Length: 345
Image (cartoon, rainbow, N blue to C red):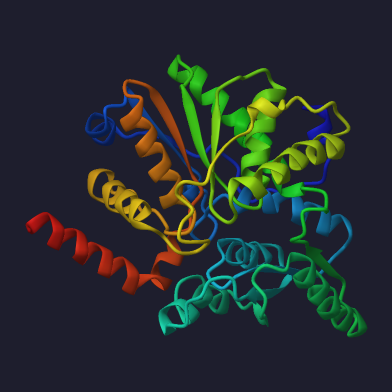
């Protein structure tokens, strides 16, 4: 796409991520096939969907001759961990603002997983006490950036608030093209794709990319941060923003937006019984590791869809998040124990 090629980008990953068949799982749930798009395998510090997004944010940062990157995420954010790793590769300093988005006070959550990796990667950590204040988080980053600028640094902020141009979504337009090429190699198109829907960049870019090349495969976005009543308008605006960023007509119709928040409970960052069940099934049937924040909830939606409508070809976008499971060790162990006790009773 010519419009996409004109936008600055830095290369953090240079090949397709695998599209793996899950034969054992498909047989178990009654699907014709299950394919997993392994964006958790794209190579940068445990990988994940944020690698694709960062290629465009950091591309813009480098054109502005930035030497310091600032961004916000939850305590166990995969985005900030991936950004810290990318900054190491590019010789940039990284300032991470961790916000209290999840009500967990145990030491595992506060110190292990992605937090430990941020420290290993040399990022400077800051803290913001409000977990649902995107505008406030961005403003606090601006204040940190001003201090850095006074020291002679050239900071670049990756913003949180949805009013900013969604550069990160462009990485998933490319992912959509990549997927369609892989489907052509396989000789068929799937019946449905499942993807987490949080900031809207991964979900938005994927749907936009498919529709802009005329691919009508249904995509179900699984709400992982807010309910469908809030996420729906956010996503429709995101599609428009992508089109404006590229200077194109918007190819996405309102009817292309499919959302479910059935698996969101109890809240962002906390997995419910269906998500924990999905984690066990993925691990024990295919050796596939899911995280409790994004991928387990999305996988749970796919499992339910397969059970309700069997004999279809399904695709799950694995957006990574593996390191965060170490921040939830106690919860995961408890759920495994409870499931074992229930099975034995």
